[in-house]
Image (cartoon, rainbow, N blue to C red):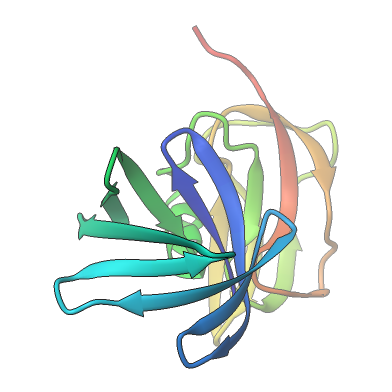
Length: 173
């Protein structure tokens, strides 16, 4: 299961590859790590990685956002998993200003690709319809832009977190 995690201004793709009790094998932006992760009684997380110990307290906010506290610093953290990506794509809002891709949050089937490379799209315009879990969902352009790449065709089966459409954003003043 891969998720996108924003820590301050940095965005990382994190994928859980294997778990045996509290020993996790994870991949962060393509690099593999083995960590020993414990959720302690006082609500902090203790992480052992390559002989180094890290303690992190996560204070939850709404919408899978957290404030992470370590011994020396704090930062804002946001987890963008399949559910969060689905809600952002369905609503056509909630994207960052630099968001230029439309993802599939879950496996499904492409019902209708409504744009082609070179098409100009407006924020909130439906660009693709996906059928998943017996529901059809419209995915909307997060910002005004030009369609740069269409990675799927009508009728194809897609995977979760697959990039469907890429945009070149149009800067508005």
